[in-house]
Image 1 (cartoon, helix red, strand yellow):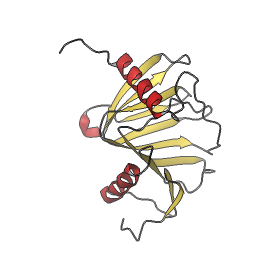
Image 2 (image 1 turned 30 degrees about the vertical axis):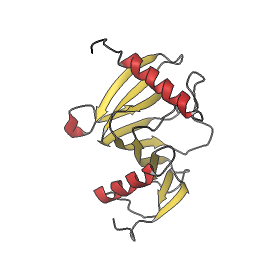
Image 3 (image 1 turned 60 degrees about the horizontal axis):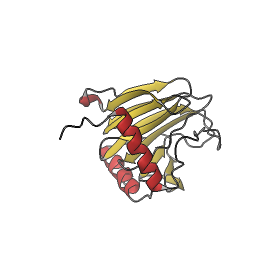
Length: 182
């Protein structure tokens, strides 16, 4: 899509809506979104294919850089699916107390890893991004209502970057303990 053909409406620096009746994405669009993501303080951006938060179906192309912190969360009353377009990521599922319950290693189709997942019921989850950039398609049911996402008290809120980084290193060590080999 040429720069002139992009009809974006920025809700904020991280959330873009398209005003096109038919939303498409090419490598050039993903490159453009990656560039926008790199300029955001939280190193992420999403292009919403649905035109308002009130839509019953939400489809998004999401870009996260490796350093993006995805605060553990769950969405009561909603299902959510993820399809990896490029990059590698660990989808970490937690129990309600913060213990790691499952880790799903994901990558694009060519990687041979799981490239698609759908969570039917609300579970706490986060992403540990393993590549420099992760590009994925996410679908969830709407409408979006501010304040309905549940965040646990056992994970930092992200306002303290150092605390969020320490927390993610701790989660990573729980799922990939050091072997002690040098």
